[in-house]
Amino acid sequence: MQVYLPIAEVSVNAFLLLGLGGIVGFLSGMFGVGGGFLITPLLFFIGVPPAVAVATGANQVVASSISGVLAQVRRKAVDFQMGGVLRAGGIVGSAIGVWVFRLMTKAGQIDLFVQLSYVFFLGLIGAIMLQESLRSLLRARKPGAPIRRAHVHSWVHGLPFKMKFRASGLYISVLPPMLVGAVVGFLAAIMGVGGGFIMVPAMIYLLGMPTKVVIGTSLFQIIFVTAFTTVMHAVTSQTVDMLLALLLILGGVIGAQIGARVGVRLKAEQLRILLSLLVLAVSARIAVDLLFKPDEVYSVTAGLLP
Amino acid sequence: MMRAALVFLVLAGAARANETIVSGLSQNRVSITADFDGSEILIYGAVKRETPVPDGPPLEVIITVEGPATPVIVRRKDRVAGIWLNNAEVRVDSAPSFYAVATTGPLQRILSDTENLRHKITIERVIRVVGITDEAAESGAFVLAMLRVRTNEDRYRVLEGRVELTEDTLFRTDVVLPANLTEGEYKVRLFLLRAGKVVATQDRLIGVRKEGLERFIFTMAQEQPLIYGLLSLLLAAVAGWAASAAFRLIWT
Image (cartoon, rainbow over the protein chains, first blue to last red):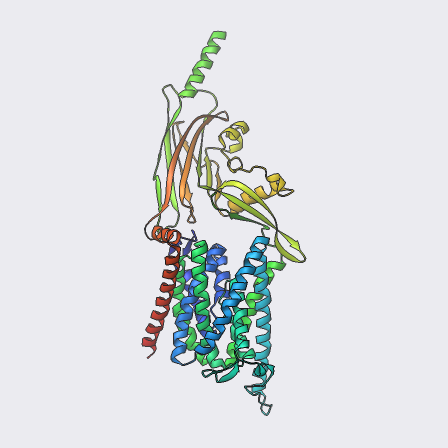
């Protein structure tokens, strides 16, 4: 069944969109990532104009994150305090990101900048996560090996402005989470994503939060980042396609519910290995585009009527 | 003898001028609704003349359908430091979003270059490029690339031999408008030709408009962007909550 999208101005199969939304929602619910880094490239691929794909992708992520976070709230797996601190940093980071975005647009190389950020950050995070989770999986298999403590004291714990995060069972300075929030906000503005794929590993490895609360807290944070992005795009460039969003959301919310259920059954290490492989795959796919000669070196962009 | 030849010429000229087009379209408006999946337009007509069919070169028919034009940026990727990136661009002042040329025979044979230039019939003549030579060294290659890309996207079509002409009088053709149609006025031009020269023309219009839900969403996005954005969020929130609630019921 073909559907004509009023803002994107293309006709797309409705079931394809429901399926795409479902797959991304499933991953989102399972890993606690918004799925923006998947949905946006997938929409490019089926012929949706990039500007519409970025804006509508953000709207879809809002829905799947809300659906996912509600499942986590009932399991008391959301640290609202931590979410608040992350968000405070996020506002600063996204303001800087918007500024850099404008600079790069002026220089005419925003596409390249976005692609390079995807390759670099996805590649880096994916590689670190894969290495770390493989190591802990091997350690778990080897009996008698020294058990790694959950809380290792480091310089992070010597910083001022300490605060108690009850849900996470942490007593740490607010500075590291604020910094994490700022980096995520910055990347969200540049790459048009929620930033879950950065936040999840940062919470686990940098802040030492228990994996149990990481997913819920990450989703909670993503809702605010992507909601802000959606409204900004709707107001500044009118590129949010409601019909496209609705179809992606219908598939996405259902997928997110199933994903959250499946995620509970999997071991934390397995979950992390799968997520890191997924992140690496997307990074490699974009790198291939940059490194190999495209079939058609020319591209045609229709401008607006003067 | 001279007089006879003169009379013949005058008569032939008069006959040529007397051939006019009577035409019709199967529809003169296309509504883009949610289930829009392209549309086929039948363009038909007849040659009206007071005198018998003149002798000499056969009658040929060309029909063009032209979508709304916009400026276009053509970019070329080059390998810089091992990475393929957009390195050069050329602006085309005006290029139609859709263009189809249907004819009774090969364009090369039935249309002369001067007439093509005068009436702007083939796509190369329709696009407008003014002073692009300063922008890049080989701007001609950019224009050719644009034509190639848009032909591959099925936006530009040459349908040679696809106009049926019966008894030098009745003609018809079908033009398929693609699913990724742009809103606006689509111009249909009909040409009668003899010996490469245009002897009669006629213009018609097809209005393409978004209707119903499509119209509603598009208008709101343009005119009430903040409300539209917030409504999109509300939609997302309600759908997210509803799915969560529904699944809780199913699983318990």
